[in-house]
Every structure is written in structure tokens, then in C-alpha cells.
Image (cartoon, rainbow, N blue to C red; front, side, top):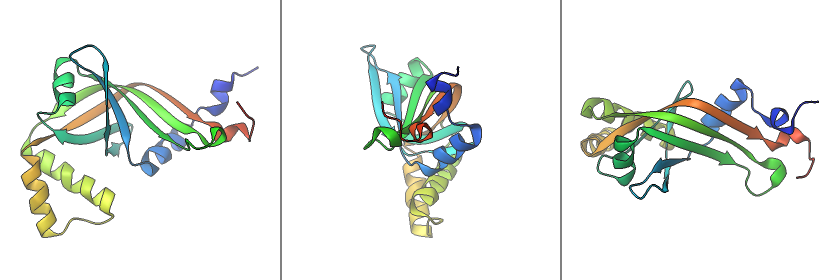
Length: 156
């Protein structure tokens, strides 16, 4: 008899669609006190690799410089158990600091969250911000996903 876990696991196609639909991931890195440090980030998907940008001097970047691993969580449907969907991705992390690559990423991220390519004045703002930012490349080494809608209304 299959486990409940296998019943609710997303297929690869479902996972990709879910990652494209959602807009915020929670990044857990290990802080200097050895406790999890959780922060929300906007992101882009490149296959199963997720990319986000943040300030280069942020605590999460310092954490990832020291230990380049993170766990990400993306979730939806929190209001009802039967609607819960999500994914946890254990990742190796690379930090991109090249200002041109960071600026290009910033433009693509802006386009995703505004729905359009940024106009010239917004591009200039993104380029200015890129000098202070880095891109975090999260490459999954393990993925766990769940979609409670597959339970067909069966409760917890």
C-alpha cells in the first residue's frame, strides 16, 4: 500500500508550475549563533534552480559565505489543510557578484513581479541597486513537495 507521502508528492511538471505560480520563497541559512536565519525573497526559476537577489552585506549573504547551503520553502493554501501545497528544497548556494550579471538579473526579476520590462528610468534604478546586491543561485540537492488537494478532501 503506498504511503500518504507518495500520494501527495508533486510530479516534476506540477512542481515547475507551482514554482512559477508562487512569488515568495523563505530562505533558511545558518546564522552566526548556529540557529536558522529565515528570510523571504522574490525569485526566478531556471529549471529547478532558483535565483534571488539581496544586499551583498546582508546577514543571509554572510551566512552563505560561511556555509554555502540553504533550505528553501515555498508554500500556498495555508488557510485550509486540504489546500496546502508546497516544496522544501535543500540547496547548495553560489553567490554571483558580477555587477553586469546582477543588473541583468534585477531587470528580469523586476519584469516578473511587475509584469513588464522595466522602462529606462526603472532600468537605471535597477543598475544602481545592482552595485550593492548579489544574486543567490540555489541548486537543489533534495526536494520534498506536497499537494494536499490530491487527497480529495480527506482530512488530517
